[in-house]
Image (tube, rainbow, N blue to C red; front, side, top):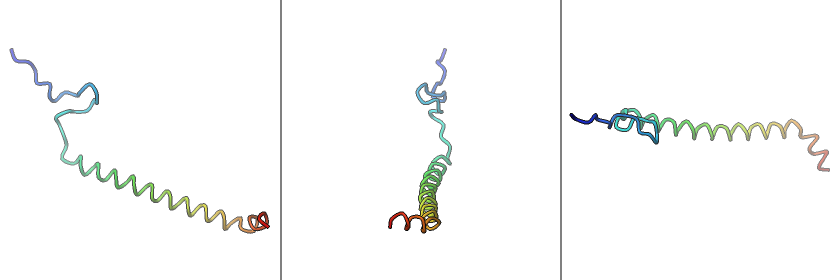
Amino acid sequence: MRSPDNSKLPSRSSGRWVSMSRPGNKIRASLFQVHSIAGLVLALLLALIALTGSVMSFEDEIVEHLN
């Protein structure tokens, strides 16, 4: 009797399929990386816009407090 082929079963450490890989995984990983970087850049830009807007909104109070 032959032993079963365990190469396509999930590994215990990762829980993912060991020998099966989809052809679109590299594209998906690349798009995820681009999406993450774009999100961080846009978040920083929006934070800068919010900060400058609040400074402009309270400009009179800030100048009065500094003088």
